Amino acid sequence: MLKEQEEFKNAVDKIIEAVMFENWLRFYFISPMEEEGNPDSNDEHLFLILSDKALKKIEELYPELLPMAMYMNKKELSFELSQKTISIYVVENIDGHIIPRDTAQSIMNSMAFQTQLELFNTWISLHEDQLEQGFSDFGAWKEMFANWQESESGHELKEKIILSKQGQVHKMTAQ
Image 1: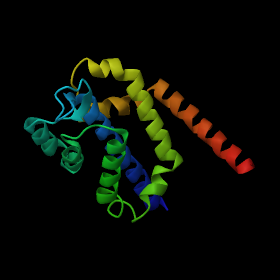
Image 2: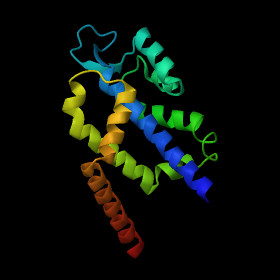
Image 3: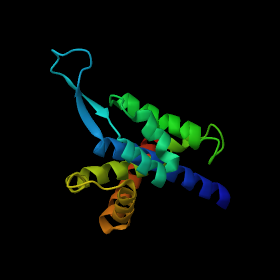
Image 4: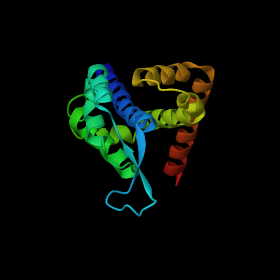
């Protein structure tokens, strides 16, 4: 049982890392561009644009995440692209590799994953101004998020999220 718990925790961590990386890409490499082929258009669309230098650095530091960067590079950003990028990464690199095949969806629906996701989204919201002050590499993001989770406010929020989710589960089972 201990091995299964460790594999589960590792899978949650890897999927959260993918979510964080996708967010990091959008946070620092977003670029507005006018609609292609329509010089009269005033509509700017947001694209993810990675320079060759940035791609080389990602390949050097985070080779396992490079496929996500390559997939998103030079594409117009949308919620659907974000979802698809993470889903493809999970299917091709986690499901059946780190965890048994076809279990990624149940992990992503788990309270552990949903709690981590909510914590990460809250961390981004709370630290957006700080993160915008200058470029932070992905490793720094991971470290800042981990440190925040270990802080008193991070622990308190995690407890509140867990209690809230347990209450939701209890309500659903009582109906």
